[in-house]
Length: 160
Image (cartoon, rainbow, N blue to C red; front, side):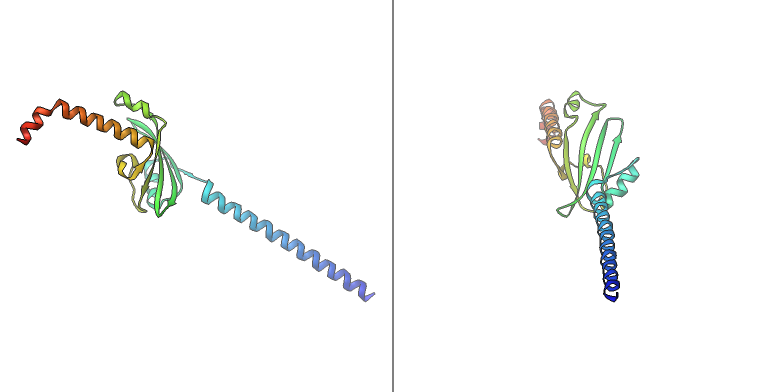
């Protein structure tokens, strides 16, 4: 009789241990999934520029659409990469300006800033690389070349 009671108690303890282990494993799995989601998948959506600037300073994953008169820009703060804050920038829609600007709609570039910096990435192309940057620089160079050719006489007089 004592052996039978001892055996039942032992079985209950083993069963209770298995249940506790299963519950702890499930909770741990839920925590790991939550961490992966918040760290790598979730992006906070900003509704205004103040929110974007504050989150850029801290380099927190963020999506922001900046809809201004000239164009609509999409920013995605991806987080720290190689010690710098990575921000992907896309020109969603060109609204005003020269006709060539509409050719670069949909192009994007990656920009890298020091942590603590807050600025609109398209204003400083030196910190960016990608197709959008290349196209913008090409057009800037064409405009500069045209300006020099148009004003070569004035430039000569001011230098001479």
